[in-house]
Length: 482
Image (cartoon, one colour):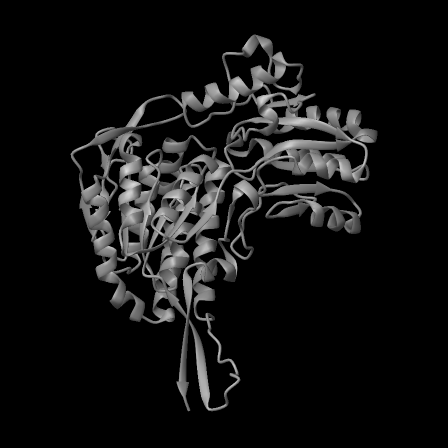
């Protein structure tokens, strides 16, 4: 059993430690973790040194031979036990995520439940991994095509959905026989420590999963020390496109394969035959869940001209129902993030955009859920991923025009189309250059049975499903004379 990371969960005196070779490691450098809701320091975390990073990889490398020899059944049982612990510890997990990310109870509950389902799904798939026995040209020879683990996997995961994304970065790797290093976000370290403790409390041997954090000032050095270590077989990263590009470049320098799930600029296309109430509800949910801090979040709402006025009114009415003025406003992860989002909004308005919802001039000191019309390419908001509670409203005449707007972005992670004509929806979805398109549902949709990932600057490779498992297996060919 791993050393306990908890204690008094409200205590600002608690320090979230690293976990290396099954032991808690308190580094000499400790940094505060800030509650985004009120700016208070809830606890501190230990920031790894380059030497800590190297020891974490060495521990995982030493654990790999024995772990790779365990059966898929045995590894699956550990993941199933971990899934059950998410249910047992849901209140504690929810408290950590609330204090570190300021997410609302609904989003937190979804994270915990979805993580348990993810673990069950990965466990169920593990025993079905198979190679092949191809027929060769020369009948006197035979061959096997095997699937085998890489060795040590480095998973780097962000703060915004820590249980889903942190678990996803290592679960498929572990169940396929790899060992792993989880580099968790310093913004939500206690959530990541809880993930690793659950794996160990489920029977995962020491060294198979190690945990490190790095403060921003030494994150580059620690990350490079991890990636360049000869024992690291593959890297997976979920996070911003800017940082993902740096991780990919670093991995390329050391010839390490990478799996990237990066930013997005999802559009929701609302056709003239759409159910307006359904479309308005899902557009606003997609835009404002977790205060817009979701990579699949709806950032553009593209509406047919014949229903544009009616849909504007539906958006206003639905906003009043989902987010009444008397309710809590959006909370983003930091003051820097707040300033960035407000800057995107003010830049757009100064250049001619107009608010449909939100952006009350009398409340400009507070962040508001905002939908802006007349957003054009000359405005920063048009191309920039806001990763906050703001969406733009656009009008189209033809399907081709709608798709040109949706595809006019460097990103391609997710999108949505609203229409009562399935043939139309499928036709448009095939022309939408993105990793996933959801017809008559919001752009945010990530479940274990569906491969998840993007195109263009939203990354490459896929998490989840059988494709996600195969990301952590490499191919080996063996031939012999009969």
